[in-house]
Image (tube, rainbow, N blue to C red; front, side):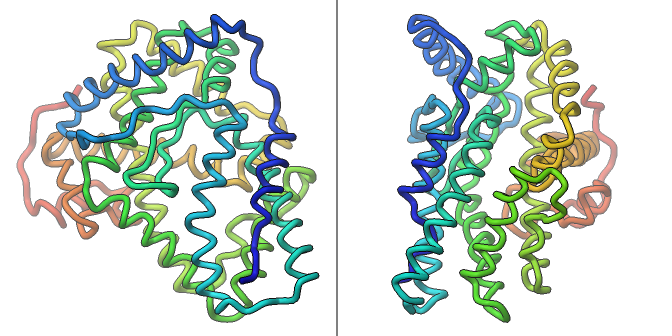
Length: 355
C-alpha cells in the first residue's frame, strides 16, 4: 500500500521542533499534574450540574501530557483515520518505491512541523480519533506558561481551562451519536475529494501549504485551498456548524459556571481575550492558515448562539440540539437563534432570563 506519511519521521520532527516548556522543578511538575487531575473531577461536577448533561460512567481518566506527548497522541489518532482512508481511496496502488519513500518523508516532515507548532499552543483537547469514546488531554506546559504570562491565579486558571475541556468531553460522551457523526463527516469530507485530482496529491498539497506558512508569513495559501468540490463545501459547512456549536457551548458553560467557583474569572477572561487578539504578523498568518483564527471566531459566534437559545427556551430546551444530527443548527441558524428555535421547538413563549 502507498504510504502517505512517514509517521515515525513526523513524530521525530514534532519532538525535535517542539519548543521547551516553562522552567519548573520536579516537585512543581508533580503538583501541576495532581492539580489538573483534581480540578478535572471538580469541573465535571460543575459542568453536569449546569448543563444537565451526564457523561458516560466509564469515561477514561484525564491524561496530562507535555508537548511531545501531545504531538504523539495526535499522530496516533491521525493514523487511525488516514491509513485506512488512503488504502481505500488509492485502491492499494503502488506509486513506485522511490516516489512513495520521498513523498511520505516530505509529508512526514511537514506534518511534524505543523504538530510541533500546535503542541506549543493547545491547552487542552478532547481527542476522538484514536479510540472510543475518546480521551481528554491537558497540555500542562502550555497551561503553566499561559497562566504565568497573564499573571493568573494558578488554581483559578487551571479550573477555568478544565471547565472548557470537560464540557467537550461531556458533549462527546453524553451524546451517544456525537463521535460517530463527527468521524463520519470527516470521512465524508475526504471521500468527496475523489473526483478530479488524486486524493493523495491533494492532501499532500494541503499539508504542504500549512508547513510552508510556518516559514513564510507572506504566504497566501490556506488550508481551504484543498476544498475544491461542491460536495466538500457542503460537508465543510456541516462541520463548521458543528464545531461552532461545540466551541460556543464550552465557552458558554465556562463563563456560566466561572463566577460561582472561580473568584478571579473576570480578570482571567479579560487577560486571556487580550492575549488571543495579540500576535505578530507571522503569528497571525500561521493562526489563519491553521484555522485558529476561524476557531477564535467560532468561540464568539457559537457562544452568542447558545446564549440566544437558552434565553428563549432554557437549558433543557437548548439540550434538544443534542437529540439527533437533524436538530444540530444549520450554518445559517448560528446567527439566527430564532430560526433554530422555530424549526426545532415551533412557537414558544418567553422564559426567565438567564442573567
